[in-house]
Amino acid sequence: MKTPADTTAMPHAPRGLTFVFRALRSRNYRLFFAGQGISLIGTWMQRIAMSWLVYRLSHSALLLGVAGFAGQLPTFLLSPITGVLADRWNRHRTLVVTQMLAMLQAIILTVLVMTRTVQVWQVIALAAVLGTINAFDMPVRQSFIVQMIERKDDLGNAIALNSSMVNAARLLGPSIAGILIAAFGEGICFLLNAASYVAVIAALLMMRIVPVRARPTNGHWMEGLREGFSYAFGFEPIRYIILLLALVSLVGMPYQILMPVFAKEVLGGGSHTLGFLMGAAGCGALVGTIYLACLKSARGLGRVIAISAAVFGIGLIAFSFSHVVWLSMLLIFVAGLGMIVQMASSNTVLQTIVDDDKRGRVMSFYAMAFMGMAPFGSLLAGALASAIGAPLTLVVGGGLTILGALLFARKLKAMNEVLHPIYRKMGIMPDIDQ
Image (cartoon, rainbow, N blue to C red; front, side):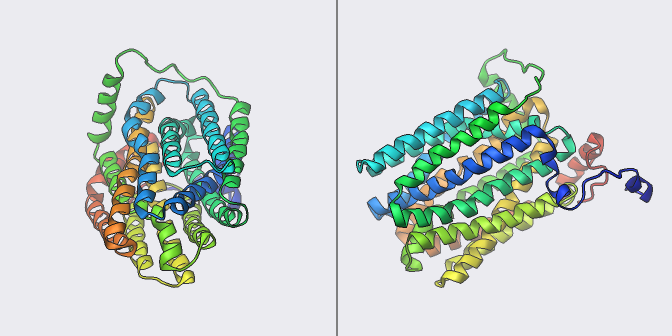
């Protein structure tokens, strides 16, 4: 435990807002934060526009599920392989290439929509293309965060700020998209997203990356995959965190693809209503990440993961019964908060305890659980919504999410017995007491 003498010995420790944003002391992370922040607003605008475009062209909840499935399936199929590559390739150069390819995808969407030649199958195909790009991008980007941070004890804060950046964009992007779609159509959202990639590409090119020790490249990729799988799923804390995240991604997170149905059929609104709902969820997620950024250490994150997953499930169930816009916005705010706190807390624990030479592979399993299970959830949610209705679909998903949180909570004691010695040995959080 810290003594008063320990406190006075650190006169330059960051406080207030400086403490909340302490990861920005690292120049490379500041560049990444600024560039990615701009790009992510465009990304969320495109997500909403693609969802609304599919629903406008097809009027089918099932095809909404198919579009979500196509966009996220590559993460499930390719992430284990890309995780091996993330531990072998130059992560900085890989990110530059993935961002350029994503910009090209947005340009193609823009041309199709603005020339009025777009069809549903084309949107689904381009969603699959972007999903393939993201399958390479996500594990590499998650692994690259530690290279951008100059002080290792700022890692948890950097992860929380990264999540807050995503969700600030999630708050702004859908709201802007709703207005632009109503005024000009979906094409303008795709065009602005393509332009926004210039910011993140420029930020990446301006970074000064310290060379890291060369990663081993000998051996077949299957050997590296097998090693990563044994490491991740043979270690109880990593296994339990990934399994809970996979369950929540399968049954809970696909609520997003049903939002056009709730906006139009349950609440009787249009693209504005969809933007407000997604913006409210993003606002809740932003509040959750600010809370995580204010934490001094990883103390209690095990309980936070379990509680936030339960809050997410409760929020979904309550939202499914609402027929009033303002109440729906409040309830989806709660759900968004619970979802992102669980995700970011899981990310922080994994990034803290993982060995550097296996970081890419572990984060690929994280990506596989977080994003890779979502396509199956999207397809399942779309099919269920067509059969039993969107509200009841969310009740089922929320209930299973709560059950997963309870099972995870039962494993906390066993997890802590393994984690506490690791934290103390690392010297990052010597006074952990979850």
